[in-house]
Length: 325
Ligand code: FAD
Image (tube, rainbow, N blue to C red):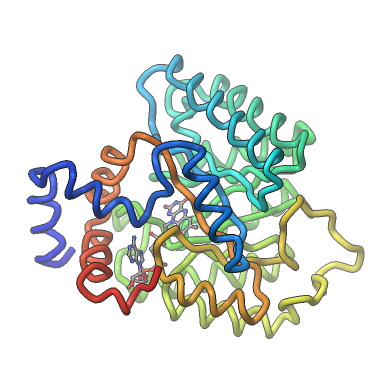
């Protein structure tokens, strides 16, 4: 972490709430589902599709999970009623994964079953290393119950990721659907890469492994070396806009709204110019749409976990041309 990052993390907790809100506004669709729907409806003209995240994470008691389940049920209904091109992203610790794994599986299953009724895809976001194995297990458990509308996120920075890709592919076969990102959590150096270049290289290796395994691969990065590597890796394997996935002899049945074996994903408010360029040349692009009232806690936690986010935010406010919304 650089000096600037350290300063931001020290002083931001003392900043007035309205300052944090002003900054957070760019990255959030609002506090209500209705606001999230408005944002998606206005952005759909940019050729993007969406994944909706209800803000909130690790709960302290299992009772708190009911609120998330009901809110996600509302989201699933809204996606179907408004014919939105959208999936959902859920944080397993908000459904009790670190309190009681079996209860958390039942909670996740309730959401995944409801989503399956309208062929809506559910992504299990990946959290810090305490949840890695349990999140992967939850995804595999859903597939073993015949629920194939679910896929997990893996983080390029973790040493274990290549192994995890192989194990998940073995367990969920043709239904395997990954999101690959660098990973936002600053993990210890005995389990993860910690330098920028090592993280980029490891993420690119994971993308190659996913593409070679035949899995659906959602590439979630705003970083040019990762995006450029991905474009070359796709071309090398004959994947691209409008081409049906050449990695399978028989066509693979995918959930509603999927691309031809891959897609690119971006956070709301980050590097929209790159996203629009990818979309213009025909790539499937998806925007992560977080909404909810817990924006302050979410934002502050993100900053504490990875102060580089503070640097990105400040840079995008002072030099907006580097990050056009
Ligand atoms: P960076 O090198 O961090 O960023 C490249 C450039 O993008 C920066 O120089 C900056 O200009 C811009 N940028 C990046 N982030 C921001 C920002 N917040 N504000 C302003 N500008 C920014 N991580 C997980 O651990 N688990 C997940 O489940 C997960 N899901 C994700 C889903 C999506 C759709 C995306 C896009 C990311 C997700 N992440 C997740 C976060 C990811 O792991 C990275 O921490 C994050 O994307 C930053 O890495 P980067 O590859 O974009 O590269």
